[in-house]
Length: 218
Length: 218
Image (cartoon, rainbow over all chains, first blue to last red; front, side, top):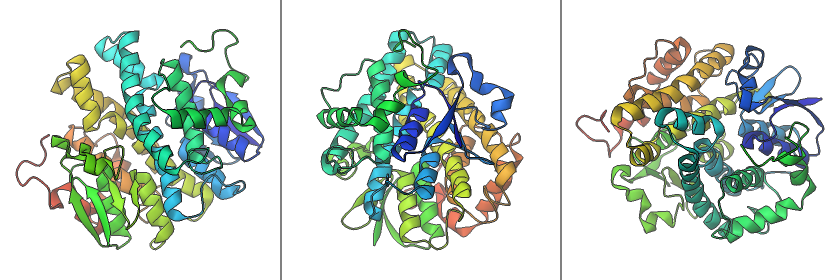
C-alpha cells in the first residue's frame, strides 16, 4: 500500500494526489501540518532530508519531489499515460510542468513568503503582490503554450502531467486573489479538470486533514 | 544540427550544455545576454514564450525548460544513460535534480534578486544573505542524499542528470561566497565532475560569449 506524506493545502502534494487518482491507485495519507512545522521533525527528516511534503512511501523506499514521484508513477504504472508518446510532445508537457514547478510555485510557497516577512518585514499585502507578480508572469507564458498545444486539457484531449501541476497552481493563485480573466485557456482547462473526479477528489478541501472552516485563509 | 539558446552564466543553460556534452552531441550556441534582457525580445519570445534561456532548437521544434530538455535528450539519445535503470533509482536522481531546480535555483537567480532589490530596496549584501540561506538549506539535504546514494558522482559511479544540476548550482553558490566545507560529499562530487571533459567544456568561463575579464562578477 502506498503512503503519501501529505498536507491538504500543499500545492506539491496536491499534484501527486491528482496523479495517484488519475492512475487509479489507492494510497494512505499521513498529514504533516506545515503551519506548525511538523514536517521538520527528525522522524520525518529521516525519511525526507528536505523536510518537505510530499513524499511517497512505496514500501522500502521513500520518494521525494513531486515531479520525480509522478515520473515514477508513470514508469511503474503506465496506464492511463500522463505523458504523450512522441518525445517532442513529452518535452512540451514536461516544460509546462517545469514552468510551474520551477518558475512560479517556488516563489510563492509558504516557506518563501515567511522569509520575505522575516527578512524585509514584508506585510501581507506586499507578499501578495510579490506572489501575484510571479504568477502573472508564468501564467502569461503558459496561456500561450496551452493555446498552441491544448485541446481541452493543457496538452491535447487527455489529462497529462501538466494538468497535475496546473490545477494546484490555479488553486494557489486564487488564494492570492489572482483573476483568471486574462487567461481564458488556463481557465477553460481548470474548469474542465474541476469536472474530473481524479482532480476533484484531490482538492485540498476534500482531504481528511483539511480545516473544516474557512479553508481559504492562511 | 541542434541549436542551444544560451547564456554563458545561466545555471539552467549550463545544465543543458553538460548533458549535451555527456551525450556527445554537437550543437550551435545562440547567446542572449540576460544582463540587457536580450531574452525578452519578441523574436525570442516567439520561440520561448517565457523569455528565458535555455531553449533547444531541434529543427521544427523549440524545447524549453532545462529538465524537460534533458529528459528529451535521454529519450532520444539513450547512450550514455543519464538515469539509472531501476524506477526507484531514477526517482532518486530526479529528486536530486528537482531539489536544485525547484528549491534552490529559483530563489537565487538573477530575475528574482532583481525583484528583491526593486521591491524591498535590498542591497547586494542582503540579496547575498537571502541566496546563501536557500543554498545552505538545499545543500544540507543534498549532502545527506549524496551520502546515501553517491559513489563518486551524486548517484553511483557514473554521471547522471543529478550531476548536470549540481555542478551549475555549486558554481552559482561559489559566486555568492558559499563555502563547501560543510558539504564534503557535494565538494567531492563537484571535484570529480571538474575533471570530466563534458563538464569542463560546459563551464561558463569556456563559453564563446563569456566575459573575458572578471567573469566572476555580476
